[in-house]
Structure formats: C-alpha cells, structure tokens
Figure 1 (cartoon, one colour):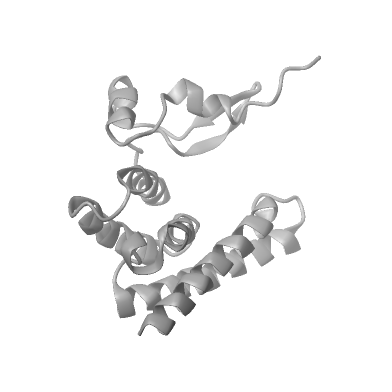
Figure 2: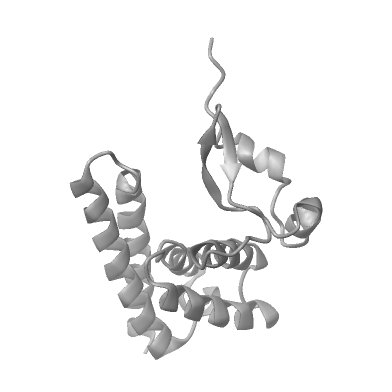
Length: 171
C-alpha cells in the first residue's frame, strides 16, 4: 500500500510538471499547440477521476503536500470536463470541512467551476482577459464583499492579485 501511495504521489507531481510545461500553449495562436494542451488536460482529468474513485480526494495526509496541490491543479485545468471538476469540488469541500485540505484551493476551484458552468464567481479568482492593459475578471456574484470573502480563505485582496497579471509598465 505504501508503495502504491508513493507511486501515486509521484504520478500526480509528474502530471503537474507536464501541466506547467504545456500551460504556455493554452491560449496559443497555433491551433495544434492549443489542441495538445486540451489533450493533456483531458488525459489528466480522466486520470484524476480514476484516482478519486480509488482514493477519494488525494489529501496531503495521503500523498504529501506537493502531490495534493498537483491534484488541485489538475482539477483546476479540467475545464472541458465539468463532471470531473464538480466531483473534485465536492470531495475537496468535504476535506476542507474536516480540516484536511486548503480553503484557498477550494475557493479557486469553486470559482473556476462556476465560471465553466456560466455562473458568476464568488472570490474573483478567474481572469477573463486583459482590456486596456488591465486584467478583467469574470463577473462576480457580490463584488462589494469579494475582498472580505477572499480574506476568509487566505487569498490576497483583489487589487493585489490582479496586479500580478498586469503587463509591466512601459519604460
């Protein structure tokens, strides 16, 4: 069993590393690069679904902190597999309630899933694009309470968050 869990942790970390390498192609102008990204995230989403069937949500207690974060990243990027995102969201919610997983990661996955469902996000974590040099978030359910809700789950204020997405000022 311990060898199986160690192998699972390494597999999850490897999937996250492949995700990081390929993510630059997610919005590429080259359709072949976009397709490669979609194939990768679909394969990873399918595998995460199998892992959730066999183990439930892969918590840090089960697979270690790095592999647990990798599982979250895989769920986050399973954008064309809403069933996988919804299942991951349900399982992660249970783990957060029990104190076994990160409320911050749950907030990001909740927003991502809601946006993919065509609903307004809660925490303002999902950026739709850039307009006039400024990051533009997807619509948010209660923009006046967004920073308060973000603080509750350990996410920096919205303005600080979007500043990371803004292009550097011209010299």
